[in-house]
Length: 630
Image 1 (cartoon, rainbow, N blue to C red):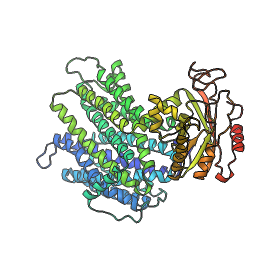
Image 2: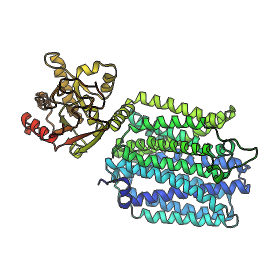
Image 3: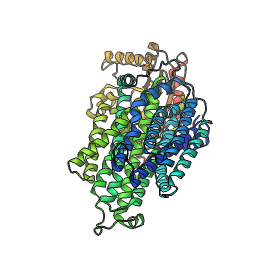
């Protein structure tokens, strides 16, 4: 199932037809929307007494409204029915809508065009839960981040490309409407043909009874995720990004005109730069997370979103003569312009770092039978936040704030929201700290991680070399294990809180506190009964010589209480590093004793049945796995 890199998925039937179906749908939506906006804006069309300015602003609300109204129902349909067939029906609906939309463009019928815009919003709302619940069925956990990175990149390329093509087609005043009608209908047909190659995707909850009451089902969806604090806050974090991104994107045309003194071509350049940034960040997520759902990238992305929004506010464009309007070529010749473009690209890139792990986490952590409804709940909250972002911007402009001041307000709000979420779910920040440590000090290579069970209990056993052994192992395992650790560590101000948050189990020696030792074994056995992974360092203390200490019998005490498979692990390359002891020395005295970006290896062997575990044999096996590379 696994691919050597995320781009290999584009050559595989389990992903490629789905990707191009999704891409063409988003591309088509944006051709239609921008063509409609240009038609209304430049030909002065009216509807229900509303002028072109009001209709242009109303177009966005009309398209997003179905996400609030239909997402709950869409989530149920995606959970109940086979997904490839459902996608094909949705694409057939798109063809029908584009036929009617073509008539609207041909006759310049505004009522029909706006009705079809609402219809396209409905079609997109129906597709959303299917899109994100499809991927976990066909991609392994190691591929989810890469797959989501491709999807997010494809989405922004489609949005940009569709927006540009819609404008280019409508530039031909004589035949533009006809061109738009032909192109959108063609894209819908090609998208349907792509969908016919999407592999079968069985229903996750075929027995589900559909609740057609949108309001009660929306409430039920929220109640469903309300019990899972981690998912709930992930959805809020995801929706906050849409609030932030919607404000930035919505202001780019006005920012171009009023602050940068550019024309429409400059707006296009800035939108392209922002989209490229998000695409680059989304694709880099797979590499930075090394094929895992790495929530440590979320704080990294959040910090970047705040920092570069503040930098954007601080950039002062080059002054131009009153009445001068810069073309794209003139804009690109100015140094300050490049500062703006680089900053916008970095905002987009850190947005990719922020959003891709959150989507992957929603897919990975949600119960399979409820996954589509969790995505539906996410889409509803996203839509509400997008509407709220528009109201927020209108309010600040009513208070006479400028566009840079609006950017400043959003940057500060982003920092406050991020801090709030990371306080409520410290795992985000903990994973960031671990990710930063492991990716700046050590270069970690792994072997045999597939031996760690994806589900169910197991006792992980490893040699103990340094103070960061637990961090390295925790950063490399897809499932975070419960570590059994010396109780003295929990007394330190920072590390104590860190490991308590990781739900580590404190233990003491028989001489220090025999009751705490027994409690630790009982807690470990209980964690295993609940299906968790438990990690123990059987040597008990860090090695002082680089050689193995004798394995103690704590592991056997746990297995007596709860017989589970034992997974042998070996750490290599840590002895003599900053966080390990050295002969006749202590740890954390001289940094970079083994050089910068020290190579470390984690080797994992096949599980051993509990009745076959022998302490001497296990120690010999782990010693052989470590070899001479201490």
